[in-house]
Image (cartoon, rainbow over all chains, first blue to last red; front, top):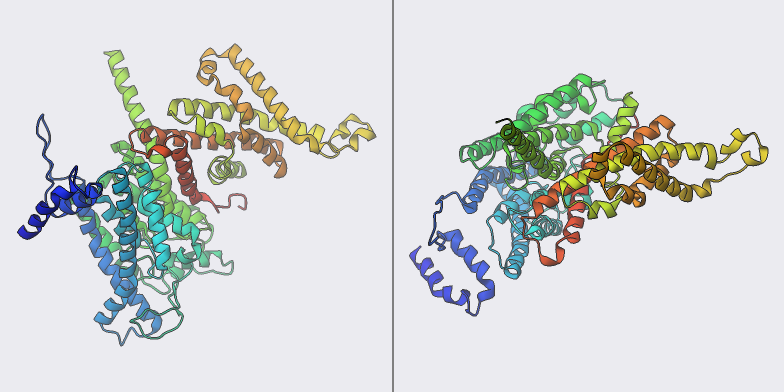
Length: 403
Length: 208
């Protein structure tokens, strides 16, 4: 590492005030603090020294996301070979290579385009490049289907970074989760590519795969559920229709079609463990979202008039299908867009769980509701905090008055 | 009963006056800097909507719509169709109602009058009010439905403006590019909020 440090030291004068590359100081600073400790030292006054700054916080999220990404690569390959009928003859290397050719370009485009937007803003507005982007740039591709066109990936991440985050002043200032803003934009702009009721259709085989035309991967369990519920002739319980192609174990492990990172509940639970243990993710939000979902799903089951309607999706299925687990662990706990007060976190999380089940069960327009539920509660988070704080102020004032 | 609850939920969340139809934007953007004033205006809108919807419904039912004047007993009047006067009459009714409401509140409750302040007369020109009156005629609501619709549309409007105000209060601490400060960022936030409210778009509460 010594020689890298030397390079930085040698180049530093160019980037500092008065140097010829002064404008690009944010780029220099980002590189340096990413590799080494920051050089800024507090010189006077009392201050708290804590290694848990934003950069470390964000790195933990990245570490927690890596298993989801790796499994997403495997699963993309697995679904591809299943659909092509070549699964039995494919070795694990084949599967991973195929998966990687689907997934890695998406991740790469997300980082390259999003990073460029971020850099332009950092240079023009003279703020630091924050590691927050590393998280957004990773979360966003994990919420996409592997077959999405790369230019749509680029358009989405551009929107998410600029409108979702930079116009508010950058990391820590945004109201809505930038990764979900990006995804929602793509979701509404190119609905046909994104929704779970349409299976992935792989028409142009990628350059490494066999020449197979128009592979059709079966619908996601939630897509199947919606279609089953909409069919007036359907008699069988909805759980049966959902597990026609996949067992509940498959759904839990994640061998089901879906967005890249969302499919495996198991890995999301592991990620949740890491985030809670390191104190990065709020356990209050996770627990309350879980409870909100469980309670609402149980009520929906009680009022379901027919076993084949989406209202009758068994409670435990809600946890293992779709993006519930992924959203719960990585999206709801985003410290910026979530509610900030402790009581607020309980309310915020609980209603995410409630809205998710409402969208899944009652709204025929979308099979999955996690993204919109989180965005909706992002909009409510500031108001929840406001009333929690006001309530606190009022309580203390009354205490003063009585004393 | 279930039908009325559905209708209320529908007009609060699914067909929110502000975030689905973008009606009443001017006061929404102008008076959403603080939660306290925003909720004052919101309450005033609920109040006026709940009153003007049924009144306009009655006006339309007994004066404006085709054959509405049959109750006079005169055949000539019964043949009239005055529905082209709807806009004019509704606006006049709304303005009159707002004045009456203002005088009434001033007489009876000083604290409410002071809390609402200038917002009460401002409501006359709030398009959400006129919009609600016109929607109810288009959708052929009954009188009871019209009261419900007015009230719950008001709640939806209240909810949206209070949400925006809370967000804007939080935005005071953020570092927004100079050109976007004020209205610019508010428009962007409104758009993002509307996108989030798409969560409910498509829920059909009328069908069941």
